[in-house]
Structure formats: structure tokens, C-alpha cells
Length: 432
Image (tube, rainbow, N blue to C red; front, side, top):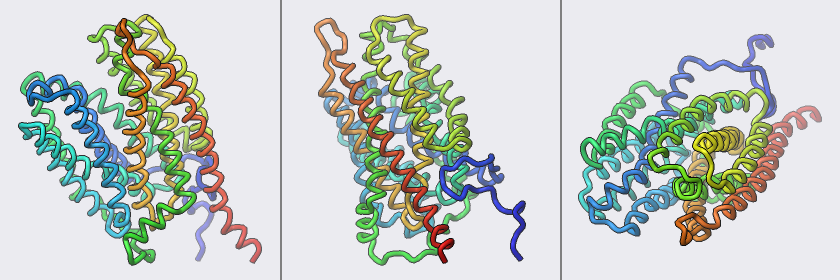
């Protein structure tokens, strides 16, 4: 007997169409929090290296060049790992796949905490990147599997606030532990924290096997090849690379620009990060709700407009009061998150269910590799002048604006493709 209209789930016939607010089940609420925790752990592990550099380099008698290798080793090994595992990503229960890579990530973090030399720490970061780089893609695949399109904006809003939470909670605590004991302490603490998270995954998370019901390709290589060569996936990968470019070009030099060019004391930097992070934690979920209510693309385009204005403003600032720097940073990050959250929700509707794992693995690899390349390009553009100020930083801003405009066009094309595929079956049914 067919269900009455009132009994049907509140879903939009076309992905990214605004609908009335759908509700999370109790398990979905728990799962969203768990996935956010995983993102927090991975992001914190990556971000903690930079502030610890001042302690690690003298402790291990390491040059700045060697420390640069330590930082970049994670990103490049994570990108390579994503590519290598893409062919196998849809062949297993996603829960088991998550546990496998999460266990390797925790062990790699433990190795970092125990390392006593440059070679040992370098190998530890490579191993940590190999496992940690895949976790994000598995998280996104699980999100697309278990949350309907009209819920994904809110879920992405919660998950992406992990970046801000790592600034507000993780970095200060990590720095306190390293000052109280040694630079090894934050990694040991993350391992203890991570073990608890792993036990929760094993105990409470349900298997994610819906994608296994569909026919699988026999060859993992062909599965990877078909994902890499699918035109609509290539468009999404290119858009991801451009969306990533902005943050990775600005962030590595933001502290030097703030201190040397804007005249802000080094001791005030933690306050700027704290206020920005707190505002982002509050605003992130609201952006996710807006994306579900008004549509992913409109919110993304609004965020892009804010980002363009604020990036141009920020990169052209001179010596300004502390309050001005705080306001500009907060509004700029609101614009950045208003792009990232709806974009992630939008492209979650791009891959077919049987290719979500491989799609997200390649997409994560694209993000890591594009970020590393963007940082290298920015490093060749900017330089320190004789007065100690950062030179040519506005050029970086222009590059970011250009990539933002190109990504906005690609996002529009992606949405058109999603709508076209969603409406095609109904057109066939109408003609039958």
C-alpha cells in the first residue's frame, strides 16, 4: 500500500533545491558530532607542527629547510595516499575502512611524539600523512551515504567548524603542554585523545555498507581510472583545487604580514586567532543551515563575494589598530567558510553511490596537492624587503580573487549538471 504524502520523507526532488527543514535522527546527531571529532583530530595534528617549530628545531638540531620538509611531508604523502587508495575505497564497509586508517593515524602520531631525531620525525610525519590524509575522504563519503542532500549543509557546517575548534581549543592546549613539559607532550595527548575516539567508533558506529549492494567493478585500477576520467568529476576536482588555493596562499604568511606590515605585536596574535576561531565556531553551523534553507550555490556565491572584498581589503592594509585587524579577519573567515561549507555539501551530490569513496579520496588528494602547490607559489611571489615588511602580498590577493571567480563559475556548472541528472529520470518517466 503506498504511503500517504504526509508519511514521505521531506526531500527535494532535485539536489540543492531549498526545502523545509528536515530533522536529524538521534543517531545522525551522534554521527555528525563523531565525524566532526575526527576532522578536529586530523586538522589539529596537521596544524600543530607550525607553532611547535620554534621548539622542535633547536631540540632536534634541525635547520629551517629540514623543518619545511617535515611540514610538507605530511601534505604530499596524504595526497599520494588518497590517489593510491581511491581504487579500493568503495570495496569495503566504510566503518572498517575508517577504523583502519584512523588506527594508522593514531600510531603515526605516537611515532611523532616519540621521535628523537630529524629522520625519525620525517618518517613519522610521512606515515601519519599516509593514514590521516584518507580519513577526511572517508568522512565525506559517510556523510553523503547517511545524510540526505537537504541535511548535508548543516552536517558540513558542523564538520568544518573543526578547523576553528582546532584554533580555539587545540593549539592553545598544545602550546601549553609543550611549554609545561616538552614538544613531545601534545602528540602524546593527541594519541590518548585519539584512542578514546577510536573506541567510540568501534563501539557505537554502525556499519556503512549500502554502497556494497550495487555491482562493483572487478578491477580496482579500472575503478580508479573510471573515476579519474569521468568529466563531471574532473570539473569537481578542478573546482576543489581552486577553492583550496585561497587559504593555502594566504595562511602561511598571514602572521608575518600581520606583525611586520600591520604593526600588530607578536603577543597579540593568539588573541586574533582566538577571537576569529570563536566567531567561526558560532557562524559555521549557521552557514550550513542557510545552505540547506536557501540552496548551496546561492550561499556559496554570497560567500565568494564577501571573500573577494575582504581578501582585497586585507592584502592592501597598512598599519592599522588592533580592532580593525580583528574585524577584517573575522569577516574574511566568514566569507571563506561561506564558500567551503556549501561547496562541500554541493559536490557531495556529484558522485554516484558506488564511486563516492574513490571520488572523495581523489578529491582529498587534489586538495592536499593543490594546497602544497599554492603555498610554494605564494612563497615565490612574496619576499621580505629591507624594512622587514612583506613585499608583493597584494599580488597574492589578486591571484586568490582570480581563483575565487573561476571556482564560482565551476560551482555553477556543477550545480547545473546535478540538476540535469536529477531531472533526466523524470523526463524519461513523463515520455513513457
